[in-house]
Image (cartoon, rainbow over all chains, first blue to last red; front, top):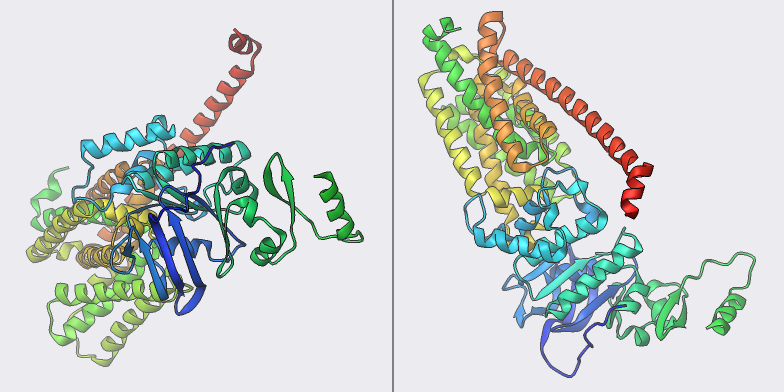
Length: 280
Length: 293
């Protein structure tokens, strides 16, 4: 279990602020009326069903989504006027794993827009290897990206995002498609970065992993449904509004967890809920 | 060996084919990795349309065909960006064939043409003039310098075009710049290889290089060397075997590809056997004992 920094709402030091934002693509709104604040030093999980607008929200922070109403501020600056300095780790399912690049080359892409020489200076290369060392992938520097495990691939793209020393790190489903041990390793790694001062905002489908590890969660489904500590947000009502399905919430070792409730055929769903409730 | 070098036309052809091979080898790496292999074929046909138009309008061939090719490449990029459900191959198919058809329509309309476009279609290495040679040299040098200048940005845009902008890379600008490079490379290759054979020179050297390495920098170097070597050997072979120069270059390149395929398969099998042997050693009682110790 992680020991995340507590979510502090007493200050006014926001790194990301959405002010009544409606945004989307090609004139169609993907997210509507979103107002939220991410405090500097936060570690936030963004949850919601597929197509809820989680990736859109991340990309709105990056300034790549059309904002039709309201404004998005990163470090107090409107994303329309200046490109936000944030590290971004995309969903890895879009990556062409047969592309002939090594781990080192991918990490160094984090510095692609600086300078015009085809090679990188010693300082940048040293920094890349220092980050790779920190992530435990320095020994894989010359290896092609296909020849890596899921966790190593995730760390490689995390390394690329960290090369510019961002204060804000945005990750799109960093725990998708990896086993429980790797997921745990990735979350610990993010927790460590968070303790070093990096604000982390990540999307995920693993709502229980968020409950177990993260201090703050944001639920979205085409709009902001709720935000708060997992114990406050994971209620059957909020989860139903977020996912459009009834869900069962249980308490386990002080954590609020969401139990899977398969569709009941020939059995009483109510009877099953009661059994789970009495067990907890 | 040195006999053909006494002919000036042969030396010019040899230099032109080697430079065009290196140029196509360089540009082809990005084309193959962007999964746009068909663009070489399409754009060379589109440029054929531009060549006819520039002749009818009385423009310089290189300027007219170059601008035409650049605009066609930009139009392909714009179409795929504007309507994401139109894949690159479909956009290439529409725009380049329309351009080619325009060239054919103009030829059939103005039947008083005195110029033969056979060279533009099939290549004519014997007809390489000093001016053609200077044009090839200029475009080759400028393309290598331009690629070096945008090397990191071009790599990122090719590898991860959706994410590159979030890292400060202006992908729209890089794509347009690459369209310009590509159009230039195809225009100067037209005289040597012809529209029908350019695609092979843009695709075979990089694919052959890809079979030999997993490293992007090495792939670029290998592709350029393979492309230049195939141009050089192909011209020599065409002299001795007495076949068309473009076909000879492409056949030599295809031969290199087959050799690389065989090498890659054999290497893969050896690595598999080594992997199995290493695993069986780890599983053997002696090694298990060593692990316990």
